[in-house]
Length: 219
Image 1 (cartoon, one colour):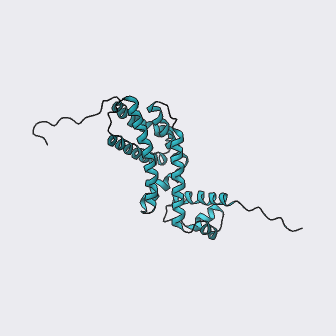
Image 2: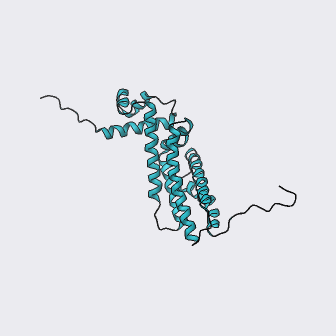
Image 3: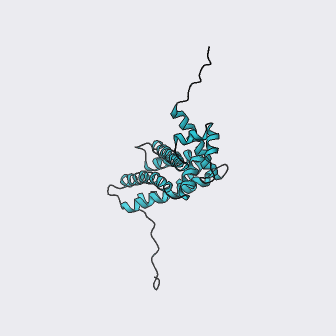
């Protein structure tokens, strides 16, 4: 009898292996230093097979950005349970964000460090993800304002600005937490919550911070 042919691995599984290897390599080595040979070896496939599935290093990196961005957005959205008080929703969203970035440090490095520093088209891919998260956070803050005031006192522009500031702080803190031994996702989320919520809660209650009045003679 002839030798039994080994079962071919499904294309989707093979692609998943290559993408996992690529994210790990790009995240740890950087886009420019990473090689297709290295990615192929880590994935356990031939280099021509990588090029067969994804035509170039640029296309592979773009696919990694898109996959990791989609996973992060999905994690944040699924972490928030509608109907909870505003602070609980924000806390849940931050926990989900920091948990995902902690569990996927190479993916976060691809999004936060690599994609943004190598220009187009990579930076645009990341901005699409960031805009989606900012829009989601804007909705949370706007809902909190409506919850606190039947006639919300926060203008739309202020809500949008707060969302941008909160997301930017979360991005920086995630990078720091991943690089600092012993910092858990819960600790990172609590740090940002303590920093942000006191001010947000005051805004929700109509107690915004105001600049001091200028004294006479000052401009």
